Length: 603
Image (cartoon, rainbow, N blue to C red; front, side, top):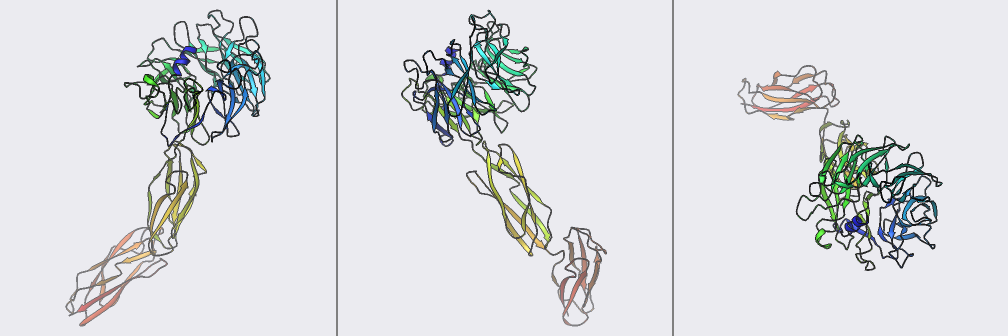
């Protein structure tokens, strides 16, 4: 494992300046080789460095526990090996925050028997050693523990890299253990080589209540397994990775996705031999979603050592420890930060470049602000370590929005009546949380009738805003629906359009007939009666005055809502000169009667 880790650490990664930020470059005195971060209930981030710190200055350092804010202010909470012989442990792993608010973790080495420890530490930095591994000859309780997780029963579960009851491995094949918050440890399983060697980097508890994990090696010359173990200790090997497998080898830890399946990465194997992204079902059916390095020089990265997380947009995010677009780390590249869909489409979000850190091997986290945070074990701005002491970084997520439709048209609407609602759907098409700061409407007659957009909208999610139109005036009316949020081009505007009309209209409003010989009848002019209401128009009666007469009509005594009918009128002059009249329609509309002025000339 040490050899593999050293090889991995020769890479580094860099991202676009507008989104990638180095929050802290370690200086050795405050730690070296930082591991996985967690975001605690206070909003700050906590982590460990496996070496460096104020103690053990004659060696590589014993490691630290640190707190870092989103702004990059780092505080060292604890330096390991404060006493002779390091009874508090050295080389800590990642932390977990328990339901009691304290942090729990392990050290890989040190303790009373140099087999590692389980510890508890408060946010103020007070550390308590709960258990010392290898308490018996041959270390049947395990040796060199990995990270912990707190299960639904309140106890902690984890693995040890070595030790255990089996003699089938030189230093023991490793264990799965349970430990109470008070420090009572029980070994649930000792690996036997035939079911795997060196479980790492820990466990997850799935929705079925069982625990899932991986072994880095075994059985025999194979290159790792995926296993399930019940809380009672019954272990089932779900998959074995053969050496040279196109399905990968040396698996990372697992995550359970929202679809119930498990996802992970492998350090090696695959089509190009440099790692894969895989999916595996609870029944053990494994699918390779992606093989790294399909192109020369591996621009997509190689060696996915840190595993995956599932983002709030449903896609997966991870890092590779080598490859990528930077040449600052020599032939092998500095590594990448990538995004991959559940169906296997991969995109590189950031290329590490040594100055911004190199060779990421720890799992990312997505914080409550939607951004991704992580560490690199090398690189950064310090010259106190041969290849840099490591970094804490943030890849700022970017919110973006789209609107469907981009505008709303209400058409004709009767004065002082309210239209049916029309809806705009907003979608967060970015990679960060969309912070909604308000939705407003402006313009005569427009109003928001419903709004499902809360304070926060996750990537990939949608919300709806509905608008109604109640025209107070006749004619064309315009308005604007405005969304205020944290998108760079805020505010975004959706245009609104409607026209206020009478309940019923008769068009055209006037008609002039050509000069007509006395006693003869002209061609007809056609008028349209429109019911703009959502209710039926009733009691329709039509009359024409003067020398004008109704010649035909499609209108009856009623007219359906939002319907039209026509009226034809002719002109028969009875005297010479200008003649005037009126077409009048009486009905149940509030603007009854509707009229059109008529004129013509007798000759």
